Image 1 (tube, one colour):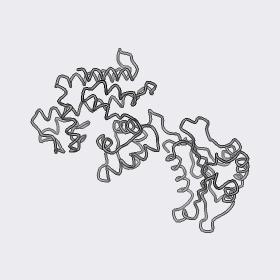
Image 2 (spheres, helix red, strand yellow):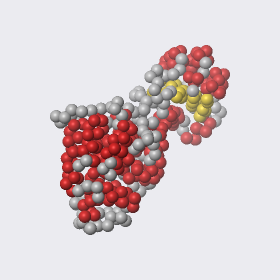
Image 3 (cartoon, helix red, strand yellow):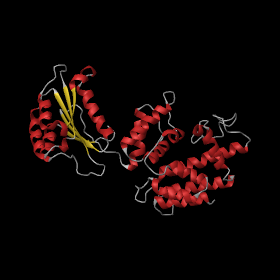
Image 4 (tube, helix red, strand yellow):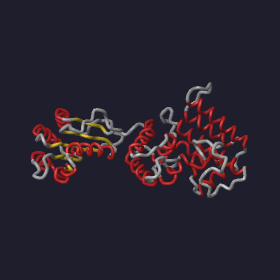
Length: 357
């Protein structure tokens, strides 16, 4: 299960799930429930308690009681780590006498910065480990986020290419719960008729927590506004960012220049692009399949106007030089160039070059 430590077994009698992302923890809870209880028994066989509210007596009472309406039971206990130390010791002893037909899930939230492992007291932790399992719901690392959200989209029946996933992460940030919520909203927007999620879809509906987005960065480059682009870059690529993080940003910059170039070529050929949703006759083979102007804009007037406006900022020769600069930056980022610089400096150098062609 993505984001969950290996070895998770939903059939175990007792599970402690902990982590900062409630969405990932709830998946573990749901899988235990689905494994232990058929749908017709969940109304009667599932009990959810808040540990501080129920107290030790309430939790132990539910551990020992059965259900007249369901043959099996699942007891979900939230925030057991908030119980006093003495109560956790007594709860540890009670876990060794749980009826065989009962499954218990302890759901504990920890901060994203926590590195202390399971947050319960050692005696309760030991009792759970002896008869069950301890599972961490850890958010993916920064480098894994685009691939992870692409997999999440695939699990929902949608195809999200890595450049699109990178743009999504650039807007939303690394909070898993927010990412999952925005992905659900995005999939609802795309609907059932379309399988692919595009950059235009992301740009249209996705919201995030970062002050600046990848779209603001590439639009600043399209306007040849180096000052604004350089001011935005630190939000998207901190100086302490992981190695290789700039590759996704470079892909978005390349996409922007390619779409601008197509807008320029089409308008110079005499086409009025506003209102057009597909390539003119005879142009299908002349336009790229990836980063295609018409699949990017999808007939949206504001996007067509934006790219046509930015196309007026470049000549043909400047666009050729831009693609050469992007290729050189890619070699630098991949360590295949004689030039040696970190990711931030490589992109800063590229931005200045593109805006000063």
